[in-house]
Image (tube, rainbow, N blue to C red; front, top):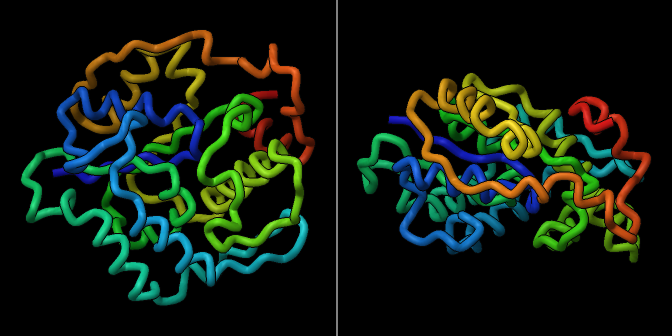
Length: 240
């Protein structure tokens, strides 16, 4: 049996991989919304706020996640995550492949990896210039008790959220089973990309309809979508 979860910021196109996994027979909980998110999310949201207490904000766009990797996990966090996943985790579920997708899981990635070290993690990445064009629950990190420089610019808030989630993922030791997939590759080179994911997961994936016009939407956008503080990460993922 394999526990599988998707790690990626909201509006990264994670619904594509979620719908693909669901279409391939993976059990993803009793209730899933149109985005492929496991519902209801409140317990996981509360878990995000618990872990946020142990993230140190250094000011500006710098956070210290080091304590998360060595300290004892807060028991309240464990209880909330287990509550959220109660219908997914064995023994209640007897499916061979099971797991969940909820973008806010990225906010607690360090402790999720420690709770589930043998799980399979799909890191889902999208060009932030496209990712920040639409609103998401994680746009304002303060909703999850995460501190960051105040700004009234909603696009800048989204860009900071993208950066924070990139930084927390990068700070976390890579789990035993992990694959990184760019949304753009899944759209523009679907067969080859999903063949790689199939090999990683160990079971065949069903195909879902993709929309090539979902790549590069920033090119026709009239607003601000490019922030210099994102450039190092964008270079790492070969977006620039």
